Length: 88
Image (cartoon, rainbow, N blue to C red; front, side):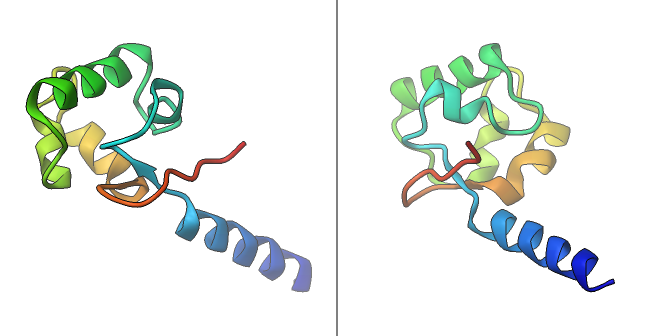
């Protein structure tokens, strides 16, 4: 039981510190997001090049291929500032 609690705590701690800055992330970093493959990652990059940085997370829905479901899946893992930190 103790091992299970330690594993759960480690997983929760890791997720708390994992974030992708959608204003600076590379294509590879964006592809680590759930439901974001090469095409959506490139669409995010193209959108921010054309429109400047994202001002809020909900603006992701304006990106071609990103809908409400994808936004809900990535919301906990994205940020607008700070350094991108993803799992190796």
